[in-house]
Picture 1 (cartoon, helix red, strand yellow):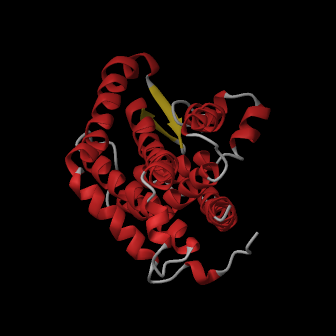
Picture 2 (cartoon, helix red, strand yellow):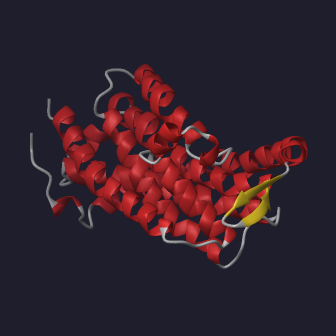
Length: 263
């Protein structure tokens, strides 16, 4: 297996990124709809239906409404989903069905630059969807500005983390249907048990410790803190966790994809 080097971060990887942007712009109306409507459906359902049953929630020594609690979590889930699904299903289609990777490999681009460009594009999708969703959520009056604007660059870091995770699975699955396995065993549990819809304090002690190993838990904490304007020392740990997660998983996914593509 070829070792990972810093040469994957070159100006040419943006050629891959730009190619995906051009294709995205051809269907931008379809891609624009989910991050625009999804928060509306969730917040209306939880805000009108469930919020009255739950009441207020204690967070950071203050009482907040349930809508205020879940709105930032929906943004974090949005970051995860856009990067992960872009670098699983979409990357797999470009690699296997459309043969886009084969075409790019006939150019001066290296495999590492192609994969890095794909992951960076997945992170960009997270940023774009986050900006749209942040705009929609703002109308509900549940976010504090200007702190909430920091969620947008955080979306890129989270996008790299979950894009790398998605690319790692893309390097392993033998057919596109097998993506259901990591979605069912990893993405769905994170979606439910990372402090998204209820505080982690409601879980047993062992489950709380387990939740702290999940990247979405730390992303949710960071987005919620930025969205509500609440800061404490635990945020540094969460940020450090995501940075280390990226530094480990990003090169592993690039090397793993290189191994698959040179077979």
